[in-house]
Structure formats: structure tokens, C-alpha cells
Length: 152
Image 1 (cartoon, rainbow, N blue to C red):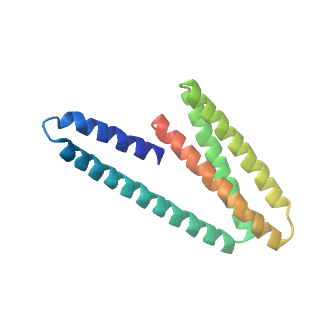
Image 2 (cartoon, rainbow, N blue to C red):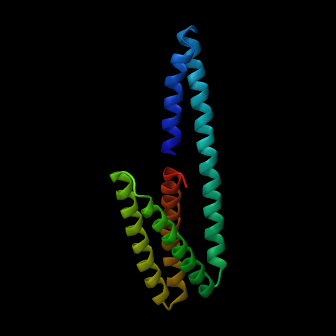
């Protein structure tokens, strides 16, 4: 989302230099139109992602405990592999810091999964599952953002 906003601002600044012969009002109107279009795209993407996460949460509640834990373990293994690939990319110091944060986030998720696995009461399990789902979703989003930045 930050990337889209920054892109909008950059486009609006570029529009000024491209249309120097136009009046200031025309330039501002075009920049506002572009900004409006970009914001609507970001809003739409956010709504789509929110619906996906809601559907996943709903599916997870109806999934059996064993199957849920297996799916979560598989997802964590896959994201660990993705993090390792990103780690091999090297790059600037801030990107290395991002990778270190991803590794910490993954380690936290693994510990949370271990805690979830140890719970015997079904009601407690489902209550903790909601929190664990948020951890998984934020990890997934962070890995995807790092991959996009790395150009993968």
C-alpha cells in the first residue's frame, strides 16, 4: 500500500513537468485524477485481500484440528524456504534487516504453532487459532512484500 501511495505522489510530481504548457488548474486536476485512480486500486486490492483472509479464517474454523495443524506446518516450511532464498539474495543493509525480521517472525510463528499443538481443549484451541491465523497472514504478507522488493 505504501508503494502505491509513493507511486501516486511520484506520478503527480512527474505530471507537472510533462505538461508545463498547461495551466496549473489543469495540472492539478490531472494529478488529482491519477491519485484518485491509484487510491481506488489500493482500496480494491485491500478489500480483495481482506475477503481472502476472511474466507481462509472461516475455512480454518471448519477444518479438523489435525488437518489445520498439518496445513500450518506446511505453510511455515514453505515460507522458511522463501526466507532462505531471500537471505541468499544479499543486498543492502536495510534488506538484510528485513530478512532478519522475517526470520524472527517465522521463529515466533513456529513457537506459536507448538503452543497451539499442545492445547488439548477444543474451545481453547479454536480461540488461539484466530491469533495464530493473524500471525500466519502477516508473515505471508511480509514475505510477499520482501519478494516483490527483491524482484522475485
